[in-house]
Amino acid sequence: MDFRNAWHRDGDEEVCCIACGETVARSDAREYDKHGDRWNRDDKSFEYLCKPCYREYCHFDRTGLEDRLEAAGAGTVSRDTFLRRYHNIAAEAEQTRTDGR
Image 1 (cartoon, rainbow, N blue to C red):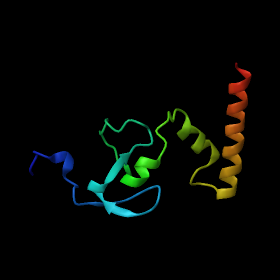
Image 2: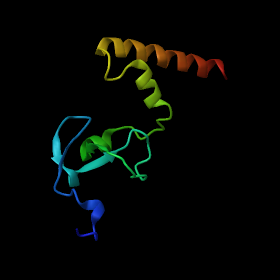
Image 3: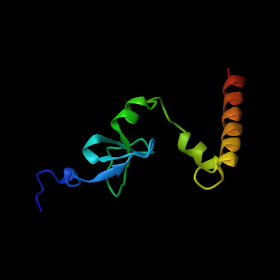
């Protein structure tokens, strides 16, 4: 095995953009790590965004986002149920934020 560019070993691989669903060459995509720690690569798999979607997505702090998505049932309940739950969780968080001023 050639270790000179071991971290590029999947350079010709195609990946699917999690935002738009397009299949693009790995070299035309950006890694997305839902935990926000893309530099720690031990035993990790990444999702990908195509470059146009990467430029468009929000780069604001995501602290607590994954917890809220999981609490709302992302990927495990119907879209309507997820949206209702997420809306309630977001409203509670906003109420807590404004009450704490």
